[in-house]
Image (cartoon, rainbow, N blue to C red; front, top):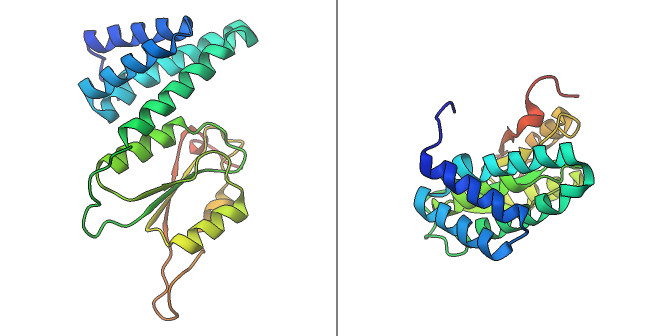
Length: 197
């Protein structure tokens, strides 16, 4: 935070934004792969991918439905690049517990959570990524069945963030009687900032 992007990162942003505006999927794939190789996943996300996603989002908001195809295509290619980064993970770190990642019900924006999943996977940490809009009953069942050490719940907007859901997931137990465990529940995303209903 607060760190100005390098000249190279700014050039990479402009190139990716131009490719997205042209709906040039092949060039987007090449530029995303180069940025991920050059900066590593967290820095590429912070300094290239997110700025371009924000710029495209702002353009779509001001241009109406005319620019939504750019946002959708860019998001698809970013998602693919993140999956490719984590396609061949290193061996699991010894003693590392499972992290379960899911968007809260009603939340369809999952790219930041996909970036977290790819980052954790590249670190050798086991991850179960459930993606967008996981229903409450399915989330509770997944926690009960997998027994994760941590559950990360993503909310992009305050309208989807739910403290009641957090409490429900925190209450899920598994294991033998007398040695039952519960997950650490972490909330992520701008939806959790400020007052939450």
